Length: 141
Image (tube, rainbow, N blue to C red; front, side):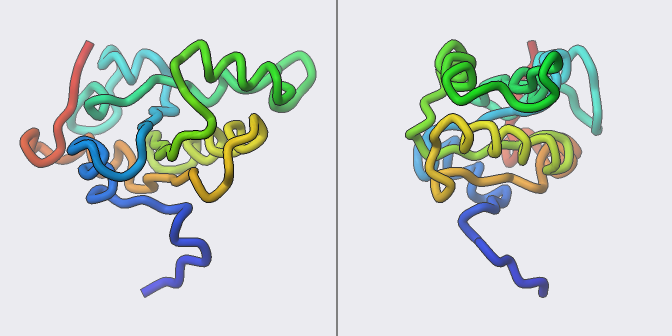
């Protein structure tokens, strides 16, 4: 089995299920496009989002004019406008665990403690491809 250098930075499906039961991290962030979050675009066997997740497409944090992430204050404003608190324990996901790391980095730049951030690297590739809605609940629309 591969060694994980910082286990707190990685979450698995069971960690996300704990969030859905009101345990563990307080925020679940979906770094995919808004269309995927709404279920209008489908990648995987199912369309939609993990129940209770907040949509924060990773591109929202990028200043295309300057060519990088927005400054910390602007990042905090973006996060606050979406109801995301940088001080709360957070798990991010996307399609395969890559875009969610961009959200984690943006949150860290905004002041989130690194130890409070975690990446569900199974992401939609695992959750959205399971056809068992009782075990892997999703929401569309």
